[in-house]
Image 1 (cartoon, chains in turn green, orange):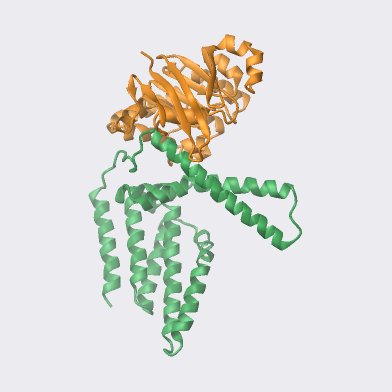
Image 2: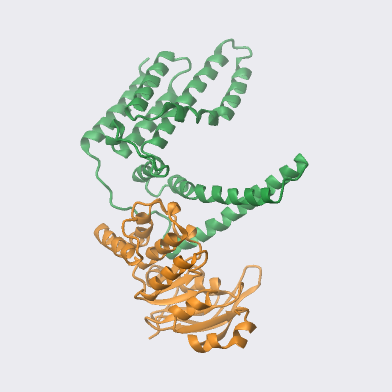
Length: 239
Length: 234
């Protein structure tokens, strides 16, 4: 469970599963959803049912996850536009593709939201470090997760300072102020990155995160995870 | 033999502006030294040279008699620990325990030893039981203590602290002073807090304009009002 949000709840079935297996299963699920052919509605339905079951087993509030769906709006708009363009001349194909991408992207986002809730961002990053030790992307994600709070706090302080001096009356001026703030935040982030880099070097960092004690995966959990991955592959391959 | 020596150190920024103009100093094992100076005096630049974050352009830095060079940076960084002024720069891992363990793991210590050291360091700074806490959920005082633990855990011979009391309330500052007084290693404390310098250190260096302007016993230097005024410290 995410310690960031410090939610306190009773342990669920999902809590008994090793975080690394949960991450493996979510990655397999997202890959399967992405690889399903357009219009394979029965298989989309089966995977959606599986996702719903995971939400129920994990006692994850579905409404909490559904609130994240608007994040996909730009994707929907972009895909909708390209589907509309591709449908001209090939009747029906564009709509099918659009709906498949819409459903697939929504299911993938809901699967990721599930992972953000359980095991939570910190444990998820630890699991990713287990699979991809030293990976630039995982390091980047870890740092982003650590510093997003600091950057948001900085942005809030700047907004407060702006508001305390009143808002410029013209929209254009307000936009200019917003642009300056974004630029200033960027520069401050760069400066912070340099300072963090110094702090890491000062403690002997040479480019690869040191690996702590690695808890071995229980073979039953690993077998369950691999079976799930095989099932996902079967859903994609078997028509 | 001094544990840390700086000799005729000069440093120019890429813009050509001189930050340090021939600084020389030495710190003996276990000595507590305050580094005072106005903003822009070159204190942070000097500090970054002490464990090889910046390498010497002119002059040299020696740790335990060995010149600081690229080849021995790992050893230098074990012996000279830096605590940065903003704990949000120092604490970059997901939990306090992982942050404190970062240095020892980079040193290649085995996990049992890492665990032992992390426990000892957190105990020493008064944060036992904070292992699984997120750094960004700590108070400023706790963050400062955790920052010190991240360096203390490497069991350095010298700990260099840049503005350790910045942003602390009086209670946090008092706690920090007690903590610094109890540390087993030599200290170099860059600060504007003269009272803290008097309480923690026995010797004071004043750096201004990239040059050492004074070096002497804490009571003598801090009693010289004219000197302090001249360097923007009073």
